[in-house]
Image (tube, rainbow, N blue to C red; front, side):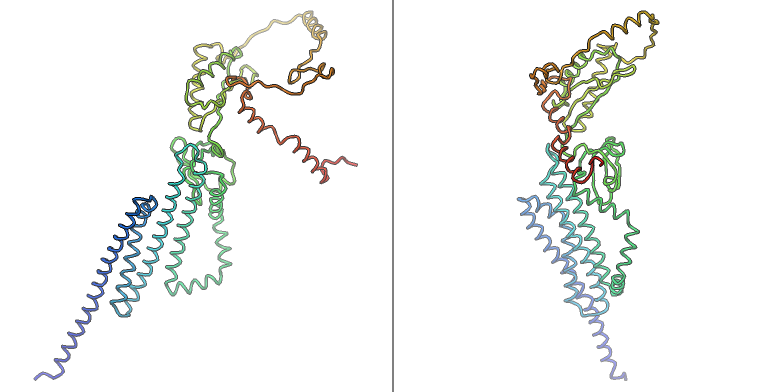
Length: 452
């Protein structure tokens, strides 16, 4: 006859099995229900934002950028709530909640980071660079890009710190690290001098307007435009589609050319070494004709001057202006080719050549006669600026005003236009009043005082 305790023991085992099954099935069903609820809430939120996005570009970009991170945050929160409501405290639930806490930190960081990208896109939509006057827009875009990178970097560091602080051993380590923060900061500063210097240089470039995105620069004898500015390096898109990667400290310690710092319009030169028989007036007329027949010229400056005439050649410089750097490069090539073709067809005698000519000796009598004629010739009186001479000054009729005739088609003088006169005033120095003030300041401080 079986013992009386057999039946109760079987019932107890069945009850334990049913309790274990219930402890597994109920949490699983709760988690599945939470996933469905999170998906429904995310879908409703996306539909609501989609309605608003029809009238707002920012809302549309927000819906596109934050759809996945928002779903991830809602999913983690829903699973956590379902697990807390459907289970009793146990070791595995503590570990699961720890994992969910780490997942929540990661997803919230992802969501906030997507909002930073939304703000960047909104700034890019407001400040467009595909317009004629885009200097302010390029400055704002550069600063927004740097701020977005800083925001993302800070978020990542904070997320990593938050994850580490969820571990008890890491919290104890953090307390010991804080106790020796002074020594660690000194060691880290010495070890990361170059990185910190590049980081501060990147911030300086972003907020001092030394360079901006899309600026045309000449660095290390390479011509290109600023394509990207980060906290540690700058990407220069060179004219032949190469990318020049330079550290940020390069632009704070090395001189470079910024062709679009204030204005995009530029002046370009074309220099030719020609023979002394070059017809300068005819060549100047050809330059004017070339400029008049091209849309590359912005009609500000177009002159031709003889800048040097020593040795066996005459150096002729053609100066022309264009609206921006790429147009100026094409204009210089166009003018150079046109003048070369003109010299070959019309003035071949002006092509550069080397001459060797012998001169017969001069007789002593002829040399003596030339010397006597030179010493007996009267000294001419040179006219002063404005058309008066020294005799006029003696008679009290001096006019100290200098008259300059400006003409829109005068291709001989750099100062032959209103723009040229304005440019010459910019490079004429500080003025006599400023110089007198500096002299007075030097005398007040004992500088320039004659010795006793």
